[in-house]
Image: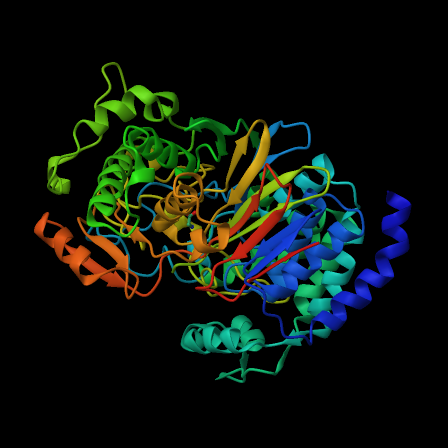
Length: 564
Ligand code: GLY
């Protein structure tokens, strides 16, 4: 296989560089052998090229991850972190945690001002908001442990893409323009993402020479190319110049963690998702354990009755999230109890006709204890490996500050900690001691890369961005396929709702639901609020009967599904 890949590498580079001038449009795709779905077409094409050249799903996923760092700066990254949930060709589940960490000098009150209030910008804007990045270590870990290609084979065409640039599509021009004032705060960001302070326009070429040099260092030296040497020096210099906390020691000590994928069942399907420090898998399985007690397939997905049941499940799960979830290396998280079928049954009987006010729900007492940005991609290969990765720099364009000379945006993931108990973060999420800031701790996430299996074979691979809304978005798409027999394209396109316990508001996507059903929700006591969109799902369905593979990117975004 290695010979096959080497003989194809120049074809690969040439095809990728030519891709940089193409326009793409493929919301859905089908294939018999492999599939890649991501939020950005060039990255999808690079992943598909890897698969077609004999690489496996892990090789393709790492290529997509690095490519997104070049072509999708709003959320693709090398300055952030992520989670991979995978099932290998033998059916073994894998969970890789490359979440950012709090620097060693971080402390519980680091974002409180002199009056004890959370500072409005320090946890969000600029280098002060950054956790120690994990993406480079994580992607290299995945490649070395599960891939078949070398890092330089994967990175060569992606370095060329950063070096020679790609044409800025409409959506990216609009997105960059919307952030122009923030880019202008930081000379390093202004230099890359603006034309002397003015927004870049659609059709211009986005050339990222410094990013190409950083990727070259990673290609030449592996993790040392990022966590040591020149790139590390540039990160630390940026911290010192901008009031950040990350030191050489923090970078040197960063490590990826292999976790045990969290598992559950739902109506005969086996499910794998991400355990803490993500809350995603726990909250998803807690909601499913409650919902399994109702026959959802008989309910209309646009009805008030259905939305009420889902919102009730979400309120319980998010109340428990706020109390119990945090980094398992620092706090004990009662995962098995929260996702147990018994707990689900107990919560189900508490669902009433009317909306339960969130004030009447608190976390469950156990007797003895206890912007919408981020991006997801899904990959399935000809060998049967299924990969589900969600990665993030938190807000769109992270903390908005590029590392001068290294060409990549830093994350603002520190805002995912609970900076002060009971005070909401940017997603309106509140937390407790379990997610308080501590040196070296991983901040709680909502990312929910998930895989459903039938008879040991992956049938559904999915995930989404969307901060706190990720978990309910993944829930609804999963139910649309498993309970409501929608094809994956319909399942992804279908209107969505969201409730997260606090604030006590039910969000719904405007124009997707009937006024009559929304009125019934009001009569049940819900405070409802329209939003333009919830999540951006990238999903793959593998039909267990026909063997056909279908991919669907979310029509709310600008991604692409491609298969063969
Ligand atoms: N930064 C969003 C999340 O991890 O949930």
